[in-house]
Length: 305
Image 1 (cartoon, one colour):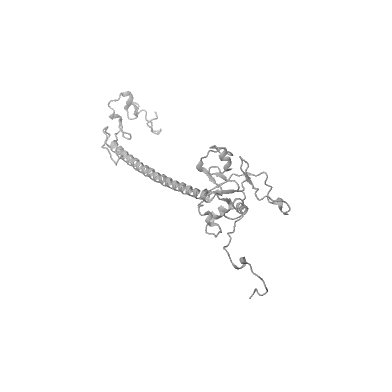
Image 2: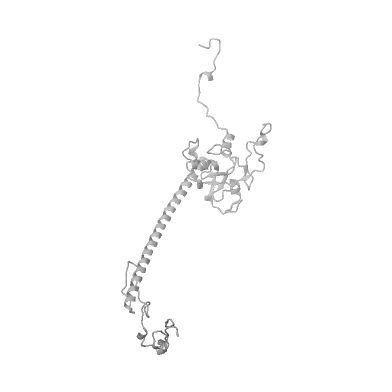
């Protein structure tokens, strides 16, 4: 069974040692992170968004995922922390003037630089190809290199001028330790927002209850005023009726001074008035006509003479 022709096997052919660990090509790994979408594995194209953990996505892929989360995807665990479109931020990227596109090397007869990127830092000019660390602001979405933010320390965005804080900076495609820190910060931020939302909701319910109680007090007051008004018109007295109490809305109501509206009094009742004042009314003796003033062929009206 073999070795009968005078062949001499070597040691590495007979003894099997441990398997060598396959090393991933760094250039291929960087290209997969910085040139392809982390969800759909398609090439990045505008509009490009980033999550709170610093991963890059095509906005179309994120929208498709949010519309149908039940669909099977190879990298669904990468976007498990994205709940809605507010959890991602559209990036404000700066184009690289040296980028010629992918169509210039269709024939394959010219050199293609794998490290050339579509975007650069607007301050220093470093290419966003993975060799240098880049960060983006959660407030405005502008992207800068870490070197630019380290050398030019400021609290205002270099590109749009919006103010920001250190908590708004998110590392793009960071290491495992950096991703863990970002995840902890994300969980703390979401917990604070949840507690603030609950406290605001409890305050709104308290305000609505107080408004309901004041409304019930107002209705009880209007009812008491209507009842007291009817009593005062019937009695025509200047004395105030008894107070009507309803919880905290207890108030005493008094009838207004002067004659009651709606009461009828004849001219004979006005004993304190003068004769000239009485003559203004049709019930006075001066306003009545004699028999000579009355004609048979004219329709009788008290105002015709």
